[in-house]
Length: 615
Image 1 (cartoon, rainbow, N blue to C red):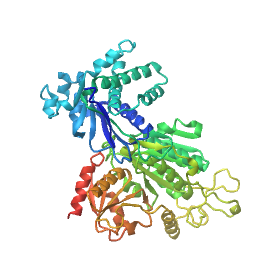
Image 2 (cartoon, one colour; image 1 turned 90 degrees about the vertical axis):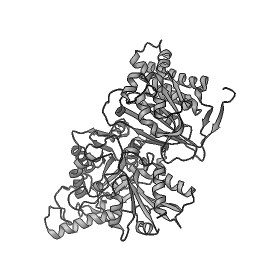
Image 3 (cartoon, rainbow, N blue to C red; image 1 turned 120 degrees about the vertical axis):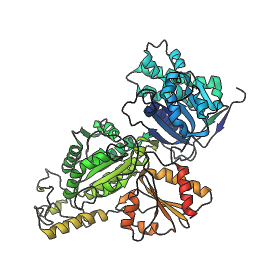
């Protein structure tokens, strides 16, 4: 076997780690992602959490998964199916095998396939591989738990602590399969457990044992694969989740504007990590408050904006419902506010750990009265940085609340993030009331683009009152005059319509496409991958993806009506399609809609889009 082993290069590989929710699969996936991103590979990840708070050990509903796609060049999705499936117990094999390619390598811990484990996983026989039709030659079966216990028998740790290190054995084995450098993983572990060095070294020891096991046995695999980095822009890279990138983008915008950042928030899946991350950065002047409820989080952020800070609030769909009254207050007071909506499956509690795009119409219209506000949708985990920066810039420069939409897939997923140079980002210039207006200024005096001037409380000579009741356009006093209300309503709407956003970009066969694929937000990677696959098949296909949803880019109508066929693909029942029909005369697209709580499958998109072309 040793003589036949060789290292082959591959363009990309997909690995899926799966096991009990207590088996550390998210950490295992994060480490492999970090190792890959650090050496310059492109990555796309998909953490797939169970919805149960703590399902019974070994149960089918308690399986947690983490899929990572590593590429030599840019990858757009975590992959439809995996090349390697790590199944830490019988339930993981039962539920996750459907995500494996027909010839995928499967790593299992035989110690977690006892008769009791098989019964919990609803196997009918004592031969799970045969029952599922899995070729044993594709399976790397080892008594992983036993080997980890032997490895750490002299560590002084109890059995429970030792068992928690099992995931590192799997990571070490996968690192061997793909010729990864263990030093990066070891550094990650020592940094993560720096306050518990004994635990760090135990995990490092098991990591090396997994790598050595693969090296010494070749693990029934005849080849080791390496994914080289190609076409990477030089710079410092890190593996970053969408939620962390959002937090960094908000901090960068506050720094650029010379303002304090305030986040008022109430914990909710899957947005809470933004609060956790920002709470770590008091040294950057960030203030975070975990409020007693959603409306308090939003209202406190609005108070911070009134006082001259960059106010932000974070939540998911159910929290947007609860924040709507305070969001409306921001509309009528015309104050800057960034409202982060990390979408999840609904309605109600729905699928709290899964991803959908069902909040779009709520973001556009989910308030009383005529209350337009800008809506921006991040298209990837790494784009969350730029999207948060853009949302903050728009809020501060136009004195308006802005909804920043991500989703569970984008927020929890990660990508290789090139550390930005803030000097390359555009300036943020709030419309502070100029000194020459002293003695003439009133609260709703406006610039040419319709944005009102901003006076910070405490500035001598600019005392003013804002509130939820309609105000007179000229004086700022409370007014119930019908003509004034009509005027103010139209001015608030026109202010949003006047905001300049980049033109809608068309990718692919933009001059002669038979089909235009349209989407928004976090489906970008899957739609882009589907388009590229169809173009390789010889089809003429283009793609237009919306990052700015309100206001729409000025060339929207021209782009959408340029092609003979259009399809709007979204993870809801047609909300973007409905919005575009409202805004573009004569636009009647086909639709592709899913609400499964899972990312699109590229193969399914290709089949559906080909059927439209062949109509």
